[in-house]
Image 1 (cartoon, rainbow, N blue to C red):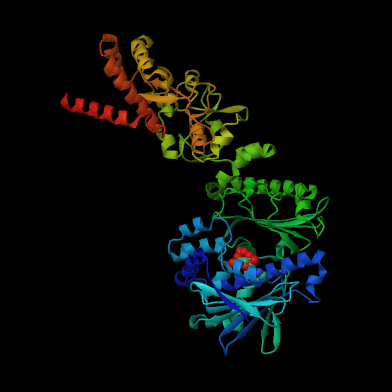
Image 2 (image 1 turned 135 degrees about the vertical axis):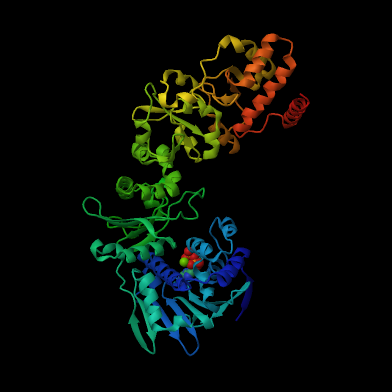
Length: 623
Ligand code: ADP
Ligand code: MG
């Protein structure tokens, strides 16, 4: 018999170190994890056996068995499910195959409480056995194969795998409990933990003790039971089971549809965002069952990507049990279930938004950026999402709805104004919004990456188009001034002729670095800003796309100058007096670079910028 020693993948070693050394609380979840694996293994075998009944090789009812041996200090968790062969043992219990592992491990800090919830979500799963065990032995035989295998490890860097005789189908995990984990040998503890975390598991969980067998869970799929019989704690425990989370669900949606399509759904909106929420694959994790049989947790047609924060299960009565992956694609039954679920989720959100505003905002802060993807992906529900959306705005500290925005629009205002930036504070500092603020016109501050995409699709809300302030300077003339804000209004309209020479000189020295130079209607405090020409791409969207290498090169922008600003006035006077063209040209470049920096761009030529700045400072010191 050959025993082979293997090293754990580096990430696993790191994880094991954390599992063993920094997780003091809630050790008991190891049992939840191992039972959940055992139950998954049974679900998978049951599903495969639908088409290959011989896999069950006469092996009766699928179940999970616990055996505690206090004399030897060992606890066994066994199942007669799908089992693992040599390669699968090495792969599943030696590596972390999921994507995002490295990124995840970087988030771990050594802070036990925080790491615990992250690890739980990530599904440290099997490795949690090392929280309580000094050594773990796994005996496994894969359904349909004859050879059994023995995997063994003390959780410190290596594991070994060798052949084993007389292994029953499925997996038997033997834990040598540490001294401080002896409580997990006691019947009362095991019963309490199983009730707490695994009561809803739809197979029997038996405790075998001194030749006796006792059933610990009720084994009725929770979602099949009437709502009235389910306690909030049971819902929460089920939520934690399916999400691997430690938080409370923010919302619980338990729905049973009877009629044209029949299904039960038990869905949750978490209160903490899952760690993989912004993974590029945008996958959801809702599990699909057919008549109580687990089918898959990767049926992407079940839930649209912009609701991927949902956790839970959907159990259909109409799909065939032996449904294949291909059949799940563009399946009309699934399409109808999805349609109904989406509606149900929206109505839940709408109710909460109305009845519990503070609670709703907590949801929005966590998941709003995801939900907003639906604005451009789900045409049918666009209005509903826009109604549910909350925004930061220049006119209020908290988040506002579009309803509130519309109610506060000024006479003559016909559009919903926004500015897109990388961060809210940068948006607030943008010179482009000065004139809007001065007139008391509210500007939405958009700083989620997704915002650039939906807002760029030219949509409107209640007949009001969304317009970028980087483009909408001329609109300001049509909007009546707000008397309350009169003191911050721009001084009387600047005299065009005063700056005509200056503008000509600016145009000349900046050349094609800008599309044009013109007098601004929107600036009150800043001397200059950049704006997009009508019909050009929004400046922030262009920057986002450039960073993602979706577009190349820069579109020249329009430089607007503030004719009432003392600096511009002085330059204009110099220009009218004549003879200082070169110094005015230098100032033009400096001001253009300043405007670029405010936009989050680098100066066009950093070397020249540094030199001009040094010259200007030196001259100011001499004067
Ligand atoms: P997860 O369950 O989230 O995939 P785990 O660390 O809990 O992560 O388990 C890793 C993998 O090991 C599982 O995906 C499964 O393939 C395999 N595995 C674990 N326990 C069992 C078991 N009792 N029977 C069969 N396979 C198992
Ligand atoms: Mg698991």
